[in-house]
Amino acid sequence: MTDHCVVCGLPVARATLREQVEHVVERAASGNGAWVLTLNTEMLARFALEPGYRELVAQADVITADGMPLVWASRVQGPDRAIPGRTTGVDFVHAFLQVTSLPRYAIIGGVEPAATLAQYSPEAQAACGYLFSGRVDLSDTQISEFVHSLRGAHVRVLFLALGVPKQDQLALKMRQAMPELVILGVGGTFEILGPQGSRAPGWMQSAGLEWLFRLGREPGRLWKRYVLRYPFGIALLASDTFRSWWSTRHRRSR
Image 1 (cartoon, one colour):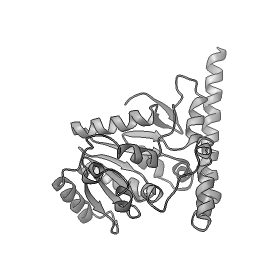
Image 2 (tube, rainbow, N blue to C red):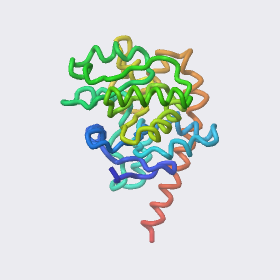
Image 3 (cartoon, one colour):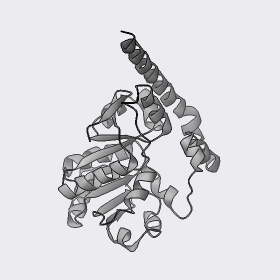
């Protein structure tokens, strides 16, 4: 998957959700591993607030747009560079679990992922070869234990539901230890897809307001993230989008 546009200095894949899922399944079948990063506004905020974080996520093999602001920003670069739509961790996992002949997969982290999987087909449940819900400390000993367990279960796709930056740090370590593995960080996906979770209405998702829906459900836990941190990410994206617009306008005026 080489077709991409550049957003905030990172190559973001220009592909639909279906194409992204098919790409992961193909990589899993061939043993051509990858770290797939779903880039969102929280991550952009960390670029401004945490030195070194951009360099960490820039090591991902594939980057997708998790959020409408990134999709809108890509459109400024012209129709030939626009991202067709967002690929959130929630949408990806939901689509993946409905694939026929699923590759063996594993989940590290998440809120009761087994309860989420119970809502899907018996085939999707049987394809899960490993679940880990304990504390992740990123130690070499724990990485070795993960590698031993995943290889023993013949896992080809690994979902990390730990939140950032821990899932990114673990993804890089697992990518180095198991180059044949396809690794995706999916944050709170299993909580949202679980029996007690819920998604924002479609119109809020399309309008880029899913964050507002989540804030309304959990204001005590999320207000700092959305009110204090997200503006840094939006400011960075706005600045980058303006530079892209100006560059595109300048080229066209020649």
